Structure formats: structure tokens, C-alpha cells
Length: 181
Image (cartoon, rainbow, N blue to C red; front, side):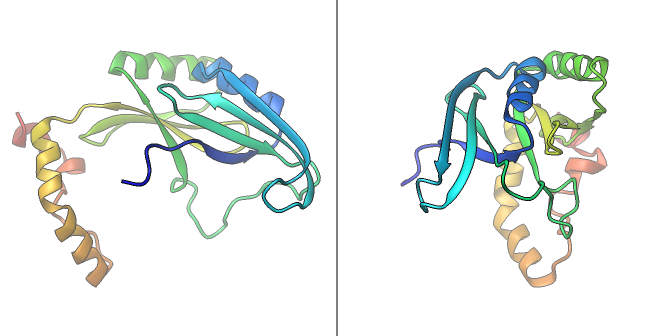
């Protein structure tokens, strides 16, 4: 395989300092690197920026660009707000619920936990409007095997019909609780 891992994922932010402090305070992500330039190294364009890198654990890096000379940040108006998000894994349901409590106590609106059968999630937004998900894995090996067995059939059916295949409807209709005991 060519790719070893994700080196970093980069998003735009409104305020790099505010963003770094928010991620450290609310998610425990430490600021590990800042790069600031007046020109873009890959294109040579004059476009001053601050590029920050945050430790997301286990060698994963979340990065942001503040671009003060560009028009204000926006989002794709044709993509529902729930679609684009960054999901971050936590170690247990206790950690997930404690994070929800801390976020709510800080005045952050939180949705969930949502039961996805394979994992439980909470959802909220960072100060830049990026949707974040904290997820705790709950899948059993049997669940993962069942999904693996139908993945290509599901994708091919979707490709033909553009209608949700029912191969894994058990994930959200609750049947998984009996099917995989």
C-alpha cells in the first residue's frame, strides 16, 4: 500500500489563537507546531497565513489555516451541515459522557449520544463552525463481519438505484441488540 497513514488533515479557521486554545481546552489537543508565511510554498502566491498543528493522539495531526486576507469563511450551501464533519475516537462510553458533560458546562450545544450500533457518538461545533463528532467504538467482531460480507453488494445496489440498501438496516433500527448477542 502506498499510504502509511494520514499525515494531517487541514481545515480553515477564523482565528488561529482562539482555535488552538479551544481545542486544547475542550478536547485536550496540544498545539505542536505553527508555520506562518507571506507566500504559499506550493504555488508562490502572496497570501499570508498562520498554519497550526494540533496533536489528535497516536500520531494523528489536525491542522488549521487562518487566512486574514481572504474573504470570510463560508460553507458549501449545497451540502447539509451534518454531512461534513471530523470524527474523533474516545476510549470508552464513560469518557464520551464525561466529554458531553464538560462541553455542555462550557455552553457548547451537544447532540447525542447517538447509537450507531458500531459506535456511540456525540456531535457539536467548534468556534469555526466545523462539525465535530466524538465516537466510542461498541462493535462486536460479528457485527463487523456481517458488514464486511455485504459492503460491495450494498455499494453496487446504491450505484444502480441511488436508494438506501437494506442490508445493514439493523444498525439503526435496533435489531442488532438481538442479532449479535
